[in-house]
Image (cartoon, rainbow, N blue to C red; front, side):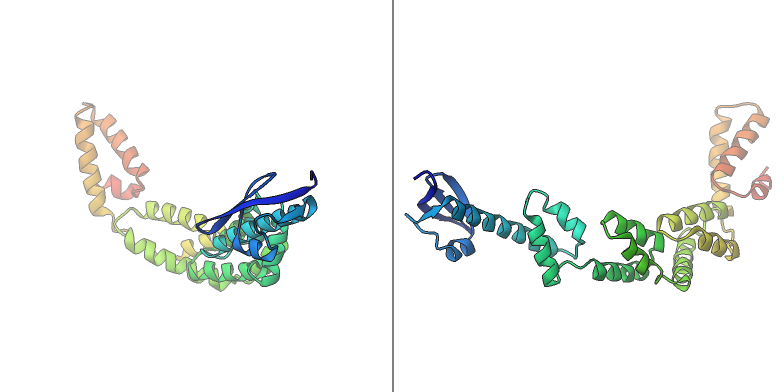
Length: 252
């Protein structure tokens, strides 16, 4: 009959079952086979078989979602995008929320802890959660928990480490690179500039200044005869590299 679907054959292939009917071929999971008593020569109405196919799609979406969650926690919006190919993804997402596998509130709290622990600023926290589709009100609720002391302590630790690694570079270069890093890491500019203005930078760049001076001087002498032109270009080069002008003058 036109309104009936007959199961012609069922063949197991690895973790799935290939179900052939008088209307086409479908991939079923074992749970669906058992739940709906799908076996050879079984006859279903078109409505019944449509419900079975809906269940198959829900199971596929759920399995894909669980696998996605197995790597790390996700937001509701991330899951919705990941399951874009499934029209019934809202059913799966609702079930995952009900089971506690998706929880934007818990995600926001955990991400705040992550940012503080890994020395990422409140703006980094805010921007990343916006990218992940978290509600703005929820972001604001947890952003205010990022205290001023959290920012100051993180900026201090980053600065100490950065200066130690770059202590032979010009102070101006260190400051510029450090400020750019702190901005990228999501700290508020008010805290950055206040801290940097009070931090004592020690200039240990004389050795590198002399090396850069001698190297560039040799290059310029091979190209120019005029001493004024050489001095002008050499000074501009060294200033551009971040060296202090008073130190540069002492070399001439």
